[in-house]
Each structure stands twice: as structure tokens, then as C-alpha cells.
Length: 146
Image (cartoon, rainbow, N blue to C red; front, side, top):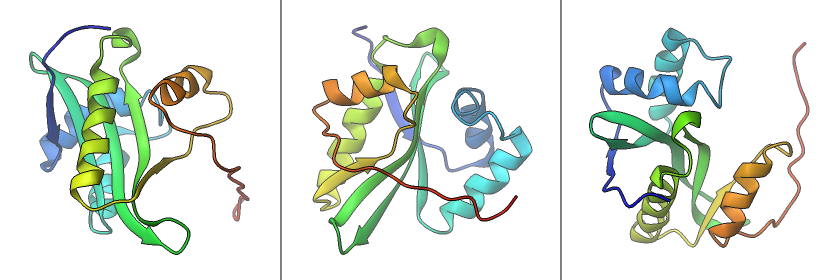
């Protein structure tokens, strides 16, 4: 782990969203730069936020999240996407961004933080367990289109 002082910020302009794409595409490879920018802007209208950890002008880790409420868990922060640049993992950027989201959730009155992680992402699972997250449910999905 590094002892860097990462800057945590939110991507609000198109330019800042585009700067996040090279890292986010490592997790979401199906999204071209144009599609990513359009989709992030659309999702932002529904409460999505895009945060990033940066060091010396270079974006290293990116997280998409939303604050929501449901009957199951009340007000919560849900992390849609969390990824650190593959070449810069174990520098502490992902940890700093995750810790920021935990702090933000508490500030926003959230009772819980949630995320889903693909069953094949063993490294991510080790990270989440080290961050004291619990595996609390199975997520089921069904494709509705071909």
C-alpha cells in the first residue's frame, strides 16, 4: 500500500467524465468513450455520481455510486462501479476512494453501504472483505433481451 495523498473529486463535466473512461473501461469494457459519457450523463439525472481518486493529475481509481432508499435496508449508498487502474493497484487509491464513499454515506445519513461483485472477481472480494464488508446475499439476474 502506498502512503500517497490522493485527491478525491467528482466528475461533473464531460471532460472529467472522459478522463475517467480509461480506468472505468477496465471494469466495463463494452462502453466506448462516447457511450460511456452519454450513459453517465443520463444516469446522473437519476442520482448517479462518478467519483475518482487522482494523484499528480492522473486518475487512478473510479467509482460510480448512488444514494438510494428501499424497504430492505433503508437509506443506503450503493456502489455501482469501483475500479482501480490495473497498473496501479495496491497503491492505496482504491482504498482511499472506498473510505471516502463510506464517509460520504455516513454524512448523507445512510445506514448501510452496498455493492454487487461478479463471482469471478476474487481480488475484489479480498479487498471488500479486508474493508470489513460482509457477504450478505445472492444476487440473481435474468436477461430480458437477446
